[in-house]
Length: 339
Image (tube, rainbow, N blue to C red; front, side, top):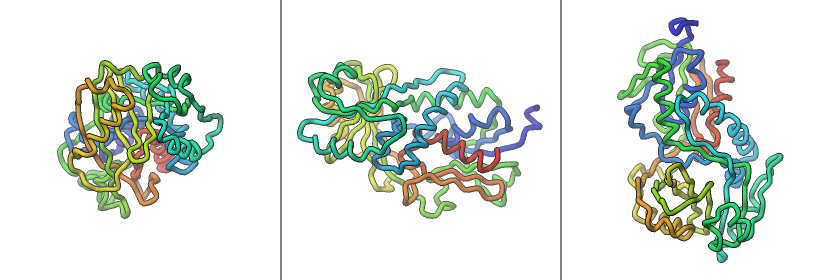
């Protein structure tokens, strides 16, 4: 089928969900992507995510079905990344959870709240087990857990590679202006299907949608050689450290119930970097590449929502589970719309 004879689909919003949707559809549909920001300089919250694929760890704060959906998405990510013209870092070597001795209670509480996932179990670690998985943590921690089913990818590489791939496939981009979806049209232009992936920018059309603040640091630390994501249990500031290629590390913590879009605070910066230093002293000589804050779109129940009205499919509210759930949620949405 020629490009001109393919069904016409508009994707409104080119963040994580917009990119995943476009990659799934580009081969069989004529795509037009509408994005308010310049597509070469995205400000999407997906660009500051750690992009951890952690269905077991996240089962502590989400329902069983969402954790299982995360396992489904783990299988879909390699298929999606294979569509890209340049390779994107992806690994599935599990997550290591550690805790200082005084925080043993937090580690045990976390372990008790893990939901059962068929075929996957958390493994208790002592100091020797931690050192076997992460040699540079040997002697630093003596209690922990290993979640072998988990993984991660490089979010920035995915954003860059998805853009270049879609451009080479002939996708039409409209950038720098707000897109209006009215009466099954985008800015007055008719499409066979319209997929609304705007996140918080769709708040006016999505009752109950709120922003949940996240704050992260990206550090270049040549003295640190962690092989997989590490989570530190802490009563006040649970921390994650996700290693990316070239000794880059994304460091963040749990969400903040705030819709403040402002820059990261001094307090958060001090707590993030101090906690990272307690995990590995090599971060002391690292270089701060960026300190950023952003808002994740979420509904009251913190579950993603899919709605189909006429020719408009809306996908929103992935909360802190964007990279974990994106391929599976988009697949569900396209099936509901019969695309």
